[in-house]
Image 1: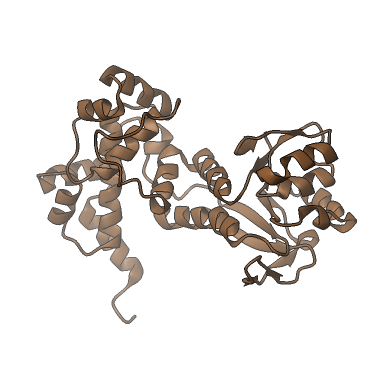
Image 2 (image 1 turned 90 degrees about the vertical axis):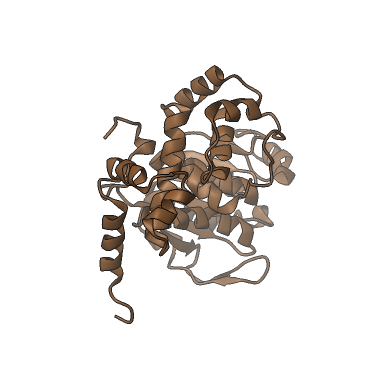
Length: 330
């Protein structure tokens, strides 16, 4: 197998499970919760194994109702919960009223058991109240930024969408929760997994070739990858992708190498093969049909590339899948 970066390597069973505690407060945002948890579920689904495991927590161990009335049954009170890799702190409305002595004590105790804490929506207010943001950088929902800076002058409050301050992360609302979690996915599983997860929730197919807005600074490689994902069945020449982005091929090559460690052509190949793997595992299409859908005119050529990347042929992978599932009605 080619010595590509970790983002391009086939799935492995040796990864540790990332343990996440999701701390909910009364009137939490359903939108924020879904944006935090669904991407983790998607990683498990795409990888075919448990990469993330999460449990719902509350301060007292009782069920919690969201702002729209959805009730969540929690697994444990925070002070009785085992630690983990991340604690997501998720209040939404009226965060100052939730900043009680009991909340502060529980958060300070939890900080010793969780390796990292992520404050979602207005979560930074509660971390600041517990003294966990003294001398740290953080953000929260824009409507509370000025109030937080005035109430806790020892915290450097930023207007950024997501702030990564090492072992404490924060974001500014429901939509930015999605961005924060995508960043965690990239940290643990690579940039390609991040994009695969994002593609499940964000459809960029409405942009016609030649009408794309200029990519944001530092996002050229991501924009190129988005174009590739929209043209899996009929792959575009790399020169055409560079033209659509308004840059030279040489610059596109440079951006892809810097971001992903490989050339655009190799990136395109990896995306097509990962789509082929998804179809092999999740559909009943023949290998010949999958080859066409993934831009291969010759099924044998796809099979050779597939075996090189994933260590087995499409038929062998499908047989392995069927063996796990068992016969119908079993």
